[in-house]
Length: 393
Image 1 (tube, rainbow, N blue to C red):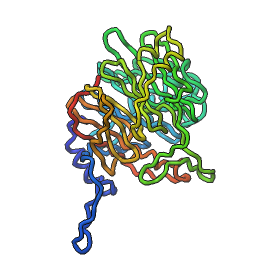
Image 2 (image 1 turned 180 degrees about the horizontal axis):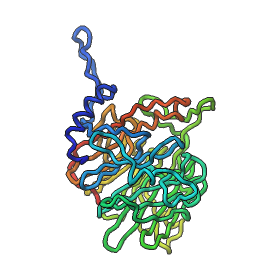
Image 3 (image 1 turned 90 degrees about the vertical axis):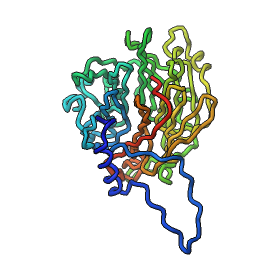
Image 4 (image 1 turned 30 degrees about the vertical axis):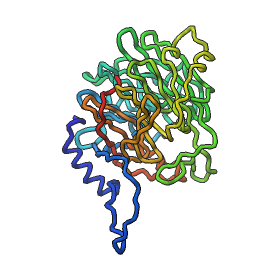
Protein backbone atom coordinates (compact mmCIF):
# COMPACT_ATOMS: atom_id res chain seq x y z
CA UNK A 1 0.00 0.00 0.00
CA UNK A 2 1.20 3.53 -0.77
CA UNK A 3 1.31 4.66 2.86
CA UNK A 4 3.54 1.80 4.01
CA UNK A 5 5.95 1.57 1.11
CA UNK A 6 9.28 1.65 2.94
CA UNK A 7 10.76 -0.61 0.28
CA UNK A 8 9.55 1.70 -2.47
CA UNK A 9 10.84 4.77 -0.60
CA UNK A 10 14.27 3.24 -0.20
CA UNK A 11 14.31 2.25 -3.87
CA UNK A 12 13.11 5.72 -4.82
CA UNK A 13 15.94 7.52 -3.03
CA UNK A 14 18.54 5.33 -4.74
CA UNK A 15 16.93 5.79 -8.14
CA UNK A 16 16.60 9.52 -7.59
CA UNK A 17 20.31 9.84 -7.00
CA UNK A 18 20.99 7.90 -10.17
CA UNK A 19 18.71 10.23 -12.13
CA UNK A 20 20.32 13.34 -10.72
CA UNK A 21 17.12 14.29 -8.89
CA UNK A 22 18.59 14.07 -5.41
CA UNK A 23 19.71 17.27 -3.70
CA UNK A 24 23.46 17.74 -4.42
CA UNK A 25 25.95 17.90 -1.58
CA UNK A 26 27.41 21.33 -0.92
CA UNK A 27 30.97 21.77 -2.16
CA UNK A 28 33.53 23.18 0.27
CA UNK A 29 34.53 26.70 -0.79
CA UNK A 30 38.13 27.23 -1.86
CA UNK A 31 40.50 28.49 0.81
CA UNK A 32 38.02 27.80 3.59
CA UNK A 33 36.07 30.99 2.85
CA UNK A 34 32.45 30.73 3.89
CA UNK A 35 29.99 31.68 1.14
CA UNK A 36 26.35 32.43 1.81
CA UNK A 37 23.89 29.88 0.38
CA UNK A 38 20.12 30.09 0.01
CA UNK A 39 18.11 29.26 3.10
CA UNK A 40 16.22 25.98 3.12
CA UNK A 41 12.45 26.16 3.60
CA UNK A 42 12.33 22.67 5.16
CA UNK A 43 13.05 19.20 3.89
CA UNK A 44 10.78 16.93 1.88
CA UNK A 45 10.89 13.16 1.70
CA UNK A 46 10.75 11.16 -1.51
CA UNK A 47 7.69 8.95 -1.07
CA UNK A 48 8.14 7.03 -4.32
CA UNK A 49 9.05 7.22 -7.98
CA UNK A 50 6.19 6.58 -10.38
CA UNK A 51 7.20 4.98 -13.67
CA UNK A 52 4.34 6.73 -15.44
CA UNK A 53 4.16 6.54 -19.25
CA UNK A 54 3.31 10.25 -19.47
CA UNK A 55 3.02 13.47 -17.45
CA UNK A 56 1.28 12.69 -14.11
CA UNK A 57 -0.58 15.90 -13.28
CA UNK A 58 -3.13 14.25 -10.96
CA UNK A 59 -2.64 12.37 -7.68
CA UNK A 60 -5.15 10.72 -5.33
CA UNK A 61 -4.62 8.35 -2.40
CA UNK A 62 -7.33 6.17 -0.86
CA UNK A 63 -7.65 5.70 2.90
CA UNK A 64 -6.25 2.20 2.54
CA UNK A 65 -3.16 3.60 0.79
CA UNK A 66 -3.87 2.83 -2.86
CA UNK A 67 -2.23 5.53 -4.96
CA UNK A 68 -3.48 6.70 -8.34
CA UNK A 69 -2.03 9.09 -10.93
CA UNK A 70 -3.82 10.86 -13.76
CA UNK A 71 -2.01 11.53 -17.03
CA UNK A 72 -3.92 13.81 -19.43
CA UNK A 73 -3.69 12.96 -23.09
CA UNK A 74 -1.73 15.97 -24.28
CA UNK A 75 -1.45 13.99 -27.52
CA UNK A 76 -2.82 10.74 -28.90
CA UNK A 77 0.42 8.86 -28.10
CA UNK A 78 -0.34 8.74 -24.35
CA UNK A 79 -1.19 5.04 -23.76
CA UNK A 80 -3.23 5.41 -20.55
CA UNK A 81 -4.79 8.39 -18.78
CA UNK A 82 -5.47 6.85 -15.33
CA UNK A 83 -3.19 4.41 -13.53
CA UNK A 84 -2.65 2.79 -10.15
CA UNK A 85 0.90 2.84 -8.82
CA UNK A 86 2.13 -0.61 -7.81
CA UNK A 87 4.60 -1.46 -5.05
CA UNK A 88 7.55 -1.32 -7.44
CA UNK A 89 6.51 2.07 -8.83
CA UNK A 90 5.07 0.72 -12.06
CA UNK A 91 1.81 2.27 -13.21
CA UNK A 92 -1.00 -0.06 -14.27
CA UNK A 93 -4.05 1.10 -16.26
CA UNK A 94 -7.06 1.73 -14.03
CA UNK A 95 -9.81 0.64 -13.71
CA UNK A 96 -8.83 -1.42 -16.76
CA UNK A 97 -6.85 -1.26 -19.95
CA UNK A 98 -10.09 -1.29 -21.94
CA UNK A 99 -11.46 1.75 -20.08
CA UNK A 100 -8.24 3.63 -20.89
CA UNK A 101 -8.60 2.97 -24.61
CA UNK A 102 -9.93 6.26 -26.07
CA UNK A 103 -12.97 5.77 -28.27
CA UNK A 104 -14.48 9.07 -29.49
CA UNK A 105 -17.35 7.10 -31.02
CA UNK A 106 -18.30 5.81 -27.57
CA UNK A 107 -17.17 8.66 -25.30
CA UNK A 108 -19.29 7.80 -22.27
CA UNK A 109 -17.58 4.45 -21.68
CA UNK A 110 -13.95 5.33 -22.41
CA UNK A 111 -11.51 7.61 -20.59
CA UNK A 112 -10.24 10.22 -23.03
CA UNK A 113 -8.23 12.88 -21.14
CA UNK A 114 -8.20 12.74 -17.32
CA UNK A 115 -6.14 15.53 -15.68
CA UNK A 116 -7.30 14.88 -12.10
CA UNK A 117 -9.31 12.72 -9.73
CA UNK A 118 -10.30 12.79 -6.05
CA UNK A 119 -11.74 10.58 -3.32
CA UNK A 120 -14.91 11.61 -1.52
CA UNK A 121 -15.64 11.04 2.19
CA UNK A 122 -16.81 7.49 1.42
CA UNK A 123 -13.48 6.69 -0.25
CA UNK A 124 -15.09 6.54 -3.68
CA UNK A 125 -12.89 7.64 -6.57
CA UNK A 126 -14.16 10.38 -8.89
CA UNK A 127 -12.34 11.04 -12.17
CA UNK A 128 -12.59 14.21 -14.24
CA UNK A 129 -12.54 13.53 -17.99
CA UNK A 130 -12.06 16.68 -20.10
CA UNK A 131 -12.88 14.78 -23.30
CA UNK A 132 -9.74 15.87 -25.19
CA UNK A 133 -8.06 12.78 -26.71
CA UNK A 134 -5.70 15.00 -28.74
CA UNK A 135 -5.04 17.44 -25.88
CA UNK A 136 -6.56 20.44 -27.65
CA UNK A 137 -9.41 21.51 -29.87
CA UNK A 138 -13.10 21.13 -29.06
CA UNK A 139 -13.94 18.39 -26.56
CA UNK A 140 -15.36 15.24 -28.14
CA UNK A 141 -19.18 15.43 -28.03
CA UNK A 142 -20.25 13.57 -24.89
CA UNK A 143 -16.64 13.11 -23.75
CA UNK A 144 -16.56 15.63 -20.89
CA UNK A 145 -17.79 13.81 -17.79
CA UNK A 146 -17.35 12.82 -14.18
CA UNK A 147 -16.65 9.12 -13.66
CA UNK A 148 -17.45 7.46 -10.34
CA UNK A 149 -15.36 4.33 -9.73
CA UNK A 150 -16.05 1.55 -7.23
CA UNK A 151 -12.71 0.78 -5.62
CA UNK A 152 -13.79 -2.55 -4.17
CA UNK A 153 -14.85 -3.94 -7.55
CA UNK A 154 -12.52 -1.79 -9.70
CA UNK A 155 -15.35 -0.86 -12.05
CA UNK A 156 -17.07 2.29 -13.27
CA UNK A 157 -20.25 2.79 -11.27
CA UNK A 158 -21.69 5.99 -12.72
CA UNK A 159 -21.13 8.62 -15.43
CA UNK A 160 -22.18 12.26 -14.91
CA UNK A 161 -22.19 14.14 -18.26
CA UNK A 162 -20.73 17.67 -18.25
CA UNK A 163 -21.67 18.57 -21.82
CA UNK A 164 -24.08 21.33 -20.82
CA UNK A 165 -21.37 23.18 -18.89
CA UNK A 166 -18.55 23.32 -21.43
CA UNK A 167 -17.66 25.34 -24.52
CA UNK A 168 -15.67 24.45 -27.69
CA UNK A 169 -12.57 25.97 -26.02
CA UNK A 170 -12.97 24.20 -22.66
CA UNK A 171 -10.10 22.38 -20.96
CA UNK A 172 -11.42 21.01 -17.66
CA UNK A 173 -8.60 20.79 -15.15
CA UNK A 174 -9.28 20.15 -11.46
CA UNK A 175 -12.02 18.76 -9.27
CA UNK A 176 -13.45 18.76 -5.75
CA UNK A 177 -16.34 16.55 -4.64
CA UNK A 178 -18.34 17.35 -1.50
CA UNK A 179 -20.72 14.61 -0.38
CA UNK A 180 -22.10 14.85 3.13
CA UNK A 181 -25.53 14.94 4.76
CA UNK A 182 -27.83 17.11 2.68
CA UNK A 183 -25.19 17.83 0.04
CA UNK A 184 -23.78 16.08 -3.03
CA UNK A 185 -21.93 18.50 -5.29
CA UNK A 186 -18.83 18.73 -7.43
CA UNK A 187 -16.80 21.80 -8.40
CA UNK A 188 -14.60 21.85 -11.49
CA UNK A 189 -12.18 24.40 -12.91
CA UNK A 190 -12.19 25.04 -16.64
CA UNK A 191 -8.73 26.36 -17.53
CA UNK A 192 -9.76 27.01 -21.12
CA UNK A 193 -7.53 26.86 -24.17
CA UNK A 194 -6.94 30.60 -24.29
CA UNK A 195 -7.55 33.51 -21.95
CA UNK A 196 -11.03 32.50 -20.79
CA UNK A 197 -11.70 30.20 -17.85
CA UNK A 198 -14.71 29.33 -15.70
CA UNK A 199 -15.97 27.23 -12.81
CA UNK A 200 -18.51 24.42 -13.17
CA UNK A 201 -20.78 23.42 -10.30
CA UNK A 202 -22.52 20.04 -10.52
CA UNK A 203 -25.48 18.77 -8.51
CA UNK A 204 -24.57 15.09 -8.27
CA UNK A 205 -28.12 14.08 -7.37
CA UNK A 206 -29.88 15.64 -10.35
CA UNK A 207 -26.93 15.91 -12.74
CA UNK A 208 -27.53 19.65 -13.22
CA UNK A 209 -24.39 21.50 -14.38
CA UNK A 210 -23.99 25.27 -14.01
CA UNK A 211 -21.18 27.28 -15.63
CA UNK A 212 -20.15 30.31 -13.58
CA UNK A 213 -17.67 33.19 -13.64
CA UNK A 214 -16.78 32.93 -17.32
CA UNK A 215 -15.01 36.12 -18.32
CA UNK A 216 -14.48 37.16 -14.72
CA UNK A 217 -10.99 38.43 -13.81
CA UNK A 218 -10.60 35.67 -11.22
CA UNK A 219 -10.95 32.86 -13.78
CA UNK A 220 -9.07 34.49 -16.68
CA UNK A 221 -5.46 34.00 -17.66
CA UNK A 222 -3.72 37.14 -16.42
CA UNK A 223 -1.97 39.29 -19.03
CA UNK A 224 1.73 40.17 -19.16
CA UNK A 225 2.80 37.48 -16.70
CA UNK A 226 5.43 34.81 -17.25
CA UNK A 227 5.92 31.73 -15.08
CA UNK A 228 9.54 30.72 -14.33
CA UNK A 229 10.30 27.07 -13.55
CA UNK A 230 13.81 25.62 -13.19
CA UNK A 231 15.23 29.12 -13.75
CA UNK A 232 13.65 29.36 -17.21
CA UNK A 233 10.60 31.22 -18.51
CA UNK A 234 7.83 28.80 -19.49
CA UNK A 235 6.80 29.72 -23.03
CA UNK A 236 5.05 27.79 -25.78
CA UNK A 237 7.85 26.89 -28.16
CA UNK A 238 6.43 24.62 -30.86
CA UNK A 239 8.88 22.96 -33.20
CA UNK A 240 9.44 25.35 -36.09
CA UNK A 241 6.86 27.83 -34.81
CA UNK A 242 6.98 31.24 -33.11
CA UNK A 243 7.34 31.50 -29.35
CA UNK A 244 4.10 32.41 -27.55
CA UNK A 245 3.15 33.20 -23.95
CA UNK A 246 1.47 30.43 -22.00
CA UNK A 247 -2.15 31.09 -21.09
CA UNK A 248 -4.28 29.36 -18.48
CA UNK A 249 -7.42 30.35 -16.62
CA UNK A 250 -9.02 28.76 -13.53
CA UNK A 251 -6.76 25.89 -12.51
CA UNK A 252 -6.19 24.97 -8.85
CA UNK A 253 -9.24 24.50 -6.62
CA UNK A 254 -9.88 23.73 -2.94
CA UNK A 255 -12.79 23.67 -0.46
CA UNK A 256 -13.00 24.97 3.09
CA UNK A 257 -13.53 22.21 5.71
CA UNK A 258 -17.25 23.01 6.00
CA UNK A 259 -17.65 23.07 2.21
CA UNK A 260 -18.95 26.62 2.31
CA UNK A 261 -16.10 28.40 0.57
CA UNK A 262 -14.41 27.55 -2.71
CA UNK A 263 -10.80 28.66 -3.24
CA UNK A 264 -9.35 28.85 -6.76
CA UNK A 265 -6.70 30.52 -8.92
CA UNK A 266 -5.72 30.82 -12.59
CA UNK A 267 -2.73 28.88 -13.86
CA UNK A 268 -1.24 32.15 -15.10
CA UNK A 269 -1.96 34.47 -12.19
CA UNK A 270 -0.47 35.33 -8.83
CA UNK A 271 -3.63 35.96 -6.79
CA UNK A 272 -5.89 33.63 -4.84
CA UNK A 273 -9.67 33.96 -4.97
CA UNK A 274 -12.66 32.64 -3.02
CA UNK A 275 -16.40 32.48 -3.59
CA UNK A 276 -19.41 31.22 -1.66
CA UNK A 277 -19.74 27.63 -2.88
CA UNK A 278 -23.52 27.43 -2.49
CA UNK A 279 -24.04 30.47 -4.73
CA UNK A 280 -22.58 28.60 -7.70
CA UNK A 281 -25.52 26.18 -7.82
CA UNK A 282 -28.16 28.57 -6.49
CA UNK A 283 -30.83 28.79 -9.22
CA UNK A 284 -31.95 32.17 -7.89
CA UNK A 285 -28.46 33.73 -8.05
CA UNK A 286 -27.60 35.61 -11.23
CA UNK A 287 -24.11 35.48 -12.72
CA UNK A 288 -23.63 39.11 -11.68
CA UNK A 289 -24.57 38.29 -8.08
CA UNK A 290 -22.13 35.36 -7.99
CA UNK A 291 -19.38 37.55 -9.46
CA UNK A 292 -20.07 40.26 -6.87
CA UNK A 293 -19.38 37.72 -4.14
CA UNK A 294 -15.87 36.83 -5.36
CA UNK A 295 -13.14 37.70 -2.85
CA UNK A 296 -9.60 38.61 -3.91
CA UNK A 297 -7.44 37.08 -1.18
CA UNK A 298 -4.21 38.62 -2.45
CA UNK A 299 -0.81 37.49 -3.67
CA UNK A 300 0.05 33.78 -3.43
CA UNK A 301 2.75 33.21 -6.04
CA UNK A 302 2.56 31.17 -9.24
CA UNK A 303 0.80 27.92 -8.40
CA UNK A 304 -0.74 24.81 -9.86
CA UNK A 305 -2.76 22.65 -7.47
CA UNK A 306 -4.33 23.76 -4.19
CA UNK A 307 -5.74 21.93 -1.18
CA UNK A 308 -6.94 22.71 2.33
CA UNK A 309 -6.52 21.13 5.75
CA UNK A 310 -8.97 20.87 8.66
CA UNK A 311 -7.85 24.29 9.95
CA UNK A 312 -8.87 25.97 6.67
CA UNK A 313 -5.29 26.64 5.63
CA UNK A 314 -4.83 26.67 1.84
CA UNK A 315 -1.76 24.80 0.58
CA UNK A 316 0.03 26.28 -2.44
CA UNK A 317 2.28 24.59 -5.01
CA UNK A 318 4.94 27.27 -5.53
CA UNK A 319 6.06 26.14 -8.97
CA UNK A 320 8.66 28.87 -9.42
CA UNK A 321 10.42 27.98 -6.16
CA UNK A 322 10.09 24.15 -6.22
CA UNK A 323 8.33 24.63 -2.89
CA UNK A 324 5.16 24.15 -0.86
CA UNK A 325 3.48 26.89 1.15
CA UNK A 326 0.25 27.39 3.05
CA UNK A 327 -1.96 30.40 3.50
CA UNK A 328 -3.44 30.88 6.96
CA UNK A 329 -6.99 32.23 7.40
CA UNK A 330 -5.53 35.60 8.48
CA UNK A 331 -3.72 35.90 5.13
CA UNK A 332 -0.23 35.01 6.33
CA UNK A 333 1.69 32.76 3.92
CA UNK A 334 4.20 30.29 5.32
CA UNK A 335 6.63 28.35 3.11
CA UNK A 336 6.90 24.92 4.74
CA UNK A 337 9.19 22.91 2.43
CA UNK A 338 11.21 22.99 -0.76
CA UNK A 339 13.06 20.42 -2.82
CA UNK A 340 14.96 20.54 -6.12
CA UNK A 341 13.19 17.33 -7.14
CA UNK A 342 9.82 19.10 -6.99
CA UNK A 343 9.80 20.04 -10.68
CA UNK A 344 6.44 21.64 -11.56
CA UNK A 345 4.68 20.89 -8.27
CA UNK A 346 1.16 20.00 -9.32
CA UNK A 347 -1.36 18.09 -7.18
CA UNK A 348 -1.62 17.71 -3.40
CA UNK A 349 -3.09 14.96 -1.28
CA UNK A 350 -3.35 14.93 2.53
CA UNK A 351 -3.62 11.50 4.18
CA UNK A 352 -5.31 10.72 7.52
CA UNK A 353 -1.88 10.25 9.17
CA UNK A 354 -0.99 13.87 8.29
CA UNK A 355 1.35 13.44 5.35
CA UNK A 356 1.07 16.06 2.63
CA UNK A 357 1.90 14.43 -0.73
CA UNK A 358 2.65 16.40 -3.89
CA UNK A 359 3.42 15.30 -7.44
CA UNK A 360 6.33 16.61 -9.51
CA UNK A 361 4.77 16.58 -12.97
CA UNK A 362 7.66 18.05 -15.06
CA UNK A 363 5.10 19.83 -17.29
CA UNK A 364 7.62 22.56 -18.18
CA UNK A 365 9.85 19.88 -19.74
CA UNK A 366 7.20 18.77 -22.23
CA UNK A 367 7.91 19.12 -25.98
CA UNK A 368 5.53 22.04 -26.56
CA UNK A 369 7.64 24.22 -24.25
CA UNK A 370 11.00 23.11 -25.64
CA UNK A 371 10.91 23.35 -29.42
CA UNK A 372 9.59 19.82 -29.83
CA UNK A 373 12.18 18.19 -27.56
CA UNK A 374 10.82 16.06 -24.73
CA UNK A 375 13.03 16.87 -21.72
CA UNK A 376 10.99 14.92 -19.16
CA UNK A 377 12.98 12.36 -17.19
CA UNK A 378 10.80 9.53 -15.89
CA UNK A 379 10.27 8.15 -13.33
CA UNK A 380 8.32 11.01 -11.76
CA UNK A 381 8.91 11.98 -8.14
CA UNK A 382 6.10 12.06 -5.61
CA UNK A 383 7.29 13.83 -2.47
CA UNK A 384 5.79 14.35 0.96
CA UNK A 385 6.16 16.37 4.13
CA UNK A 386 4.61 16.02 7.58
CA UNK A 387 1.97 18.59 8.55
CA UNK A 388 0.18 19.32 11.82
CA UNK A 389 -3.45 19.01 10.73
CA UNK A 390 -5.98 16.54 9.33
CA UNK A 391 -7.41 16.65 5.81
CA UNK A 392 -10.25 19.09 5.27
CA UNK A 393 -12.72 16.39 4.27
